[in-house]
Length: 211
Image (tube, rainbow, N blue to C red; front, side, top):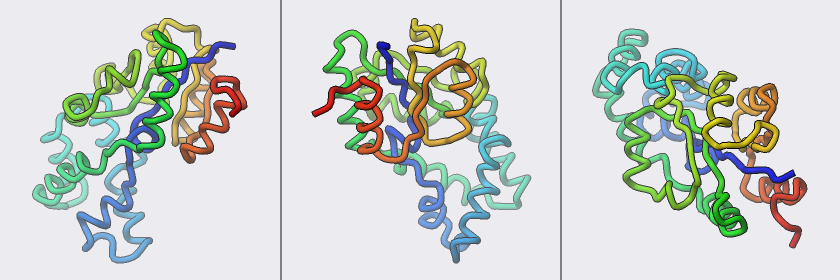
């Protein structure tokens, strides 16, 4: 089967380490591992609360800050500081980008695609600072569709956008819930753990040739 890889961004193509980010920016809320984990959980709510609405494009940055501060009692200045640091956190993961580029060279005109839960301000940032159109044939951002993974409707819309039946699309994502949703939507899927493990998985699937 001629599979087209579809990459997640945060935690796959781009670095995304919420615990390290919180510990760096808010050391007063991360004095030990348990407190740091609780702060991350309170902030992100499993991407289902106000941060989830931010990812869906239903809240802008100011509205997110207001919602989080009202919910938690945290200061707006703390939230501004954290969101500024998020942009620096989203750095390309060199080994994954190299793999994306290798896949594109192997199949000219059929470069990989992406499917990312990403809020509007960070979409703007990534497009301004990285050559996404060179790395990927096409892509879907949650904030531009007003829905997020693991919503099955987003997988259906992405398949239409990519011009492939679901069974010919291979999601590469670091969240098990999204991998499971992709499979329910009829896609192939791989749980991302490292660039090397992904490379081996792509060889096993015949997407990359064995060396």
